[in-house]
Length: 288
Image (tube, rainbow, N blue to C red; front, side, top):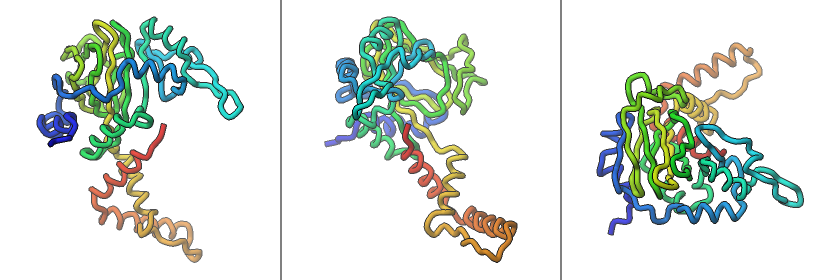
């Protein structure tokens, strides 16, 4: 019996890494079950439990976040007041006014999401993070924007209209809001079970339709040149990396030459795959 999650089969069955990766968006209808993912009742229960804390959650409307104090409150922790905890009354007031509740890095506390995310991570040389967007009807949490990562989105409940901007001049590897909002090239509505893949840097915007929308997003971040350079340096200073020992007989200039030689020797011998794996491991160890 095949116990592989349909999201993993999608990677193979639709050649996601070949036909779509960094080339074009892919919309896959009814491609993923929603069982086991956070639903609206779970979100409301988590809100009432009082353990949500900024920045692991926030409120957004048309790209604007209210002051954190407008949707959080203080709780006594270890005998002292600590701020940033979700205020259910104020959060629901903002939801009623059209704001989106965004939960960040839910893999840190929701085991089914973590297991699914780690299964996807095992197939990719990238860092993954998970986010949940809970958006009231006919509202938009974020303005048209580009993410600095690939995006894999699963519609859990309700419907969401997406607009994609992939014309020449719109795509950029840098995240940002400088999008020509009147020139979208694709428009479609996602329903429960639908999956969307967006390449890195493809501008997009999503609006809830016909009721409250709930969708899960995985961001997929590949190593940048800076990450790879840091990986190279970590290999140099790590055990057996070849960094020369300090020699008091050498001048600072001579020390510089010795370190430069060691670095160049490493650059000439390092395996690119090792460099990527080292960078990805460091990225996955990052916290908020």
